[in-house]
Length: 204
Image 1 (cartoon, rainbow, N blue to C red):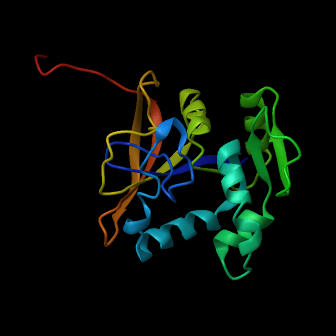
Image 2: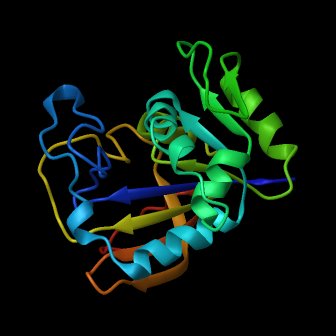
């Protein structure tokens, strides 16, 4: 049985939209695409490679799949864990609008999404990894499907943009599994959900 993990690059105010470039995702007039690029460093890249090395398959939203499909097929490299895994491993795309995807091996999940995701995960020996895929990530978190998540929290805040944890999400407690800090100040945090959040009062 596999494990569903989520890895996301976020700002201090929780924005995850378009970290890699100005044209990556300008939806809703987002003007700050590429905010991650000046903050990249070797330690962050090494962590990302570690995560990719554990992948057995990928679960992506349509937009993230299309961003990856526009780049990675032309940059395959057997000596690169990231490139090799992305190009060679099965990819599952949660979408009702994606037709005839060209970058494979790929399966479009367009039926009962939660049941299909659980079926795919349970059939794996390793991690079913979600990268980015903001709306899909929120869907998974709202249904307690994420078993472990990595937040790479970068030392910048933007004031606008799509956030990983929107209003209306489930109050969820987590345990910190691992942490490290990179040279340029990115906090790399690995959490595991432990159930509903608890509440109390200082007056007790």
